[in-house]
Amino acid sequence: MSVRPEDAFRRAVSRRDLLGAPAIGCHLLWAASVLLATAALLHVAAVLDVWLGTAGGSYTDPSPIRRVVVLLSGREISPGDLRSTLLLAIGTVLWILHRFTGHLAENSAHNVARGIGNRIRRALFRQHLRIGPGDIDGLTTASVHERATDDAGRLATATADTLARLGRDTIAATACLLLALLVDPLLALQCLLLPAAVLAWLVIRDRAARQRHLLALADETKLAENRIGESLAGVRMASGYGAEDLAGDRFDAVQAESDRLAAQRHRHHTLGRTIRQGLAAISATVILFLVSRRVLLAPHDTSLDLPSAFVLLASIAGLLRALDRRGELPRIAERAGLAAARIHEYLDRVPPVSQAVGARFLQPLADEIRFESVTWQPANGSPMLRSFELSIPAGETTAVLSIDPCEARAVAWLLTRFIDPHGGRVLIDGQDIATGTIESLRAEVLLVAGDSGGCGGNVLENICCGQTEQGLSRATEAAKAVHAHHFISKLPHGYETQLGEDTFSLDAGQRYRIGLARAVARNPALLVIEEPDSALDADTKSLLGDTYDRITAGRTVVFLPTRLSTVRRADRVVLVHEGQVAETGRHEDLVRTSDLYRHWEYTRFNAFGAIPEPAES
Image (cartoon, rainbow, N blue to C red):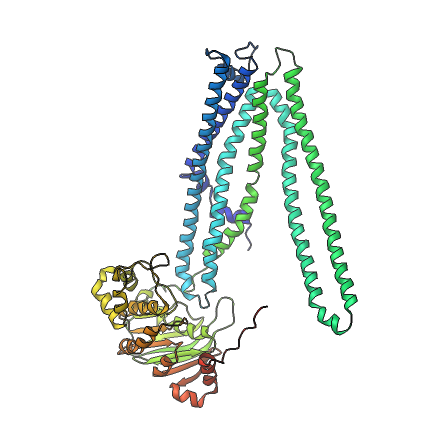
């Protein structure tokens, strides 16, 4: 069921976010900014009153605005130019304070928006903790990264814009309307009910027509580009059949038709915009006529003084501008709603792995691992494992290979319950791991992902996964077991060295050895090791053989190898093809007896095995 973008935006950013704390601080700052702007406007009107020599003049039944202007301009200060200078100085200070307060309000709005963006990113991260471990091909992680950066950023920007229009423009529109009514209620209504309303409608129509024109122009441009591409793709046939002139004529016809359509659309848009702008000018002229008539032609006791007329016109202009900006709210919500819909589509997904009710504690592996008729397929793909059967004895080192790397990865990730089978069972010592607690399973079955990063922080925190209470001695023992202690000791601060792109970066081999140390420190009964695809440094390569001898002793290990030497050292090699076990045995036996295995070896380790991609010119 599709959700409207506006509804998706309202779900992501509620009215409580926009009107409650801490957004209330933004609205208070904007209210102060509008009041300061109003005061500055009244001081400018008082300056006009002084310059026109009407300060303190007598009017029958003056309006509240006139009384304020007289109060400001009729101070007992002489000469008159000193009064105007003082009023200008005060007005300037008020305007500066207005701009400063508005700047504070904008900063506050952006802080609120960033908080909402961070809240959405945290929700995405928590959901990815539940779903992300089963991302076989990395596409889900890439899409979540886009949601957490681009989409969350669009939502934050839209939130700041919405706060401005709900706070600043609503308060400004209210203040301008009150000012206009306080100057002269009847004249304000005459100006607002027809001319100003028509003017506002024309401005909104003009903006909407421009948007439609740009969208239609983009569609026509894309169509013209496609036609040009078709013409260019047909040059071989035209040359082969001697039809160059025909192809040229058709190309010119396509160009001429595109030009004709573009010119026609431009004429229609220009004509419509000219008419709308003409009507807008007429509406503005009507407003000026109504105000000037009261200033120049009305009897003295009912006439409107020029400073009050200035306040009235400024209020009407401010009201129209505020209403115009506030009218952009639906467009902002629609644009941001597309990003919100993408975010909530991911947040609403049901995690594929969950703990069963009444789950039992899983004992460490002692006998064997068995896959019974296991079937699994990714969310948007064909089955990757079909009635998969495999038995792995405890204490054995097994290399799991596949032509499609995702098939071997699926086998390994089933063991750690990053994914769950859609059919069949995975048993450890006869117990279905789906009936055990996830915590007890992952305490005894650990995955070392060769190309994955760490958990942030310093080296010690990376090895201990943040649980530094395990102590430096345990981390050091694990690092020594995988030959990582030597290079760690040479880091600027040893085990306290902060790791990261902006602090200190490790190469692929060093990161891999840190990952092995992290797993060894937990001493699991079953270790799944996915070797990195990245090229390893010479130091790591020379030490891996002894490292593997140490960590495989007395432990069940499943390798997803990328190095031929790792395949050769395995007690058994399992080749998965088309979702089932195609071959099993030792490397030297499979090389002699299996065509499929030789094909796998050739495509992975022969310099001529991979077909090069054609270069782009």
